[in-house]
Structure formats: C-alpha cells, structure tokens
Length: 445
Image (cartoon, rainbow, N blue to C red; front, side, top):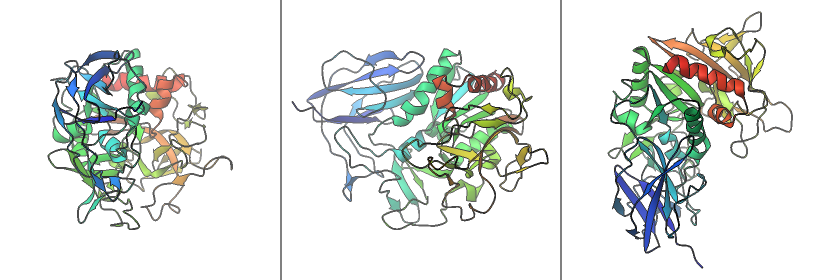
C-alpha cells in the first residue's frame, strides 16, 4: 500500500500544502512542559504541486507557490507544531524531528510576560534543505545555494522542510522554562526585524541555540533595547555571524556569504560577514571568529570538560557553591559544536581577561573559559575560527568564553555555546541550570 505524500509550510496568515492525497487536515499542538493538543483544521481538498527545481535540486531561493488554504491561528500565544495528516486517525503528538510538519509562532497582542524569547528562524531557513519524507534532493544555503550577482545568496522562507532546529533547541528549553515557572512571549527573527518597537515592555530578550543570521534591523533594535535598560541573554553560539537583508515583502533574505556555488566562491572576503562590518563582539562580547566548531557528524564529538570558572563570587554563580578553577558543566557537551569566544590574555595569576584586540568591550568579565585544543587523538580536531578569517591560525589561542558585560543601561550575558540550552533542558547539569536561573531572575525580574 502506497503512502500519500504531503508536505506544507506557513506563510503570513496562510497555510500552503502539496499532497497526493484527495484530502488532508492539520493537527496543532502547543509546545511547553506538557505539549497540548490545540485543535485541527477541517478536512481540506488535496492538491499536488511539485517543488520548483534548479539544476536537479529543489530551489531554495524562490517561493514554492504551493496551494494556499484559509487558516486561522490559535488564539493562545505560544509555539505550535503542525502535523500534516492524510489518514483519518486520532490526533496524536508525534516526534518533532521529521517531515510532514511545520511550526508556527503566535505572538500576544501586547507583552504578557517580561521575557521575550526570539526563535532563530532566519538560521533555520538557511539550513533548511526542503527535503521531504519521500524527497531527498533538496538544497539550502549550504547545499547548492543560489547566488544573485551583486546581491548574494538568496533563501526563501516559503518552502517545506523539517523542524529539526525546533526539536533540538527550542522545544526542550521551552519545556524547561515552563517547568521552572518562567513565562515567556515568543517572536521570530522576522518579527524583530520588522518591528523596531517589539522589545518595548520587556526586560529580557533570549537568544537560544544556533542564532547565526541577523539583519541590521534586528541588531539595531537589540542594541537600542540594551542601551535603554533592557537585558539580553545569549544562550546561543555562532551568534550574529552573517548579516541578512530581507527581501520580497518579508518572504526571503539575501546574504552575501562565503558559501561556494558549484566550484566558485562568488565574493571573498564575504561582504555580509558581521565581523568585517561591525564586529558582533560589541553586542555579544564574543565572536565565532575566536571560538570554533567540532566537525564531523552533527552535532559532532567534542571533549566534555565544561567551563573553568573564574570570579566565582560573581552573582552569576550565586547558589552554585563553585570556586575558581572548578568546572561548570563537566561531563556534558556544554561547549557546543559551535561556540564563540573573546580574544584574551592571562594575567600573572593565570586569570583570563579580554585583550580588546577583537573589539570585545573592556568591561566584559570572562566568567568561564574553555580553551579549544584537542584532548586526545580520538577526538575530531577543532577547526578554530572560520575560513573567512585568514589570520585565524596566528592571532592567539581560541576559547569559548562565557561572560557578562554592560552596554548603556542594560546588561548582556553570553553563554557562548550552541548547546547551553540543550544541557540545561537535559537535567544533566544542575549547576548550569542554577546559573541559568540566576540570569533569568536578575534580568527578567
């Protein structure tokens, strides 16, 4: 018996689905400590439209233009996962990782909580190959990207694909937040890009997981928020590495990166590298340039040493019992498969402090440091920094550097690791959880 194909994606207030089935429905579940069934669409007539192709791959740069269906979002704000169904079976929550599903963020009309959790949707779109349950010939910004001369690599938001990003980072961490009594509102990168006043009324913005792609508008809004007394917690890594420009009425972005198109690198050095425009250190305190990544199978093997603690009397460590030299998160993959760092020097006591050579603010306090050197030959070797930084092998040691600094009237904490929220949500590192609570309580109120 053949299984009907179905994939879909959400647009602005619309639902787009292509299926070989005569009819389908969409089941919605709101994510939290306990995911809740939130209703289903009526049965809708199925229509099939193939993926637009370019050079034998699903084109990542264009609106796929799949059939549109009326859709009314749920009334309760939150993060929802939608499962596309062709069989008349009871609605049931399935594993989040996979195809035949998409996600949807519903924002409140006005701030309902003091914390705004930003979902890293631009990064998700950049990595989305547009594959499906029975289609494995997709492309992304990383697999056969499309380059527009003089503009950059183009990525459309109106494509189907998996929600692995959400399954890996957001769903577990949102569950942890709710279990621990933290109420959050949610927004997407596009929301922050389009609404410079979106952060008004909040005390804390969260950046979670892998938050690589930022527009100038997003960055300006965040920096203004902090200068005026807001706080940011970067529980993320590889943060604010590439600049994007939103195009086509908010349905795509263009970013002139160093990704190869065929056998050609269109423009090097890449014009949209934030490091070359306005180093992200000025905002986050750290940069992927001074961190690195563990290559190999995603998310990659890496040493589980955790952060070596400095300044253990800092409020970040309150209630942990940690002392200088202790290891925070030891035995867990806290130092993510991608991590960020500040250029640093050590004083005569061996304490690391920012050198300022990379633009890291002088008041950035390095509270945890993990030097990125292979532990033994069984581990993948670290690729330090980025291939777009020609001096990356000669301008000092690399280390993931957790820390905090002030900017104007506000304060910024950076965990400097993609996997910080994963470890927190796992329950494997109670002291990392305590540090996270300290940050949320102090910043969010």
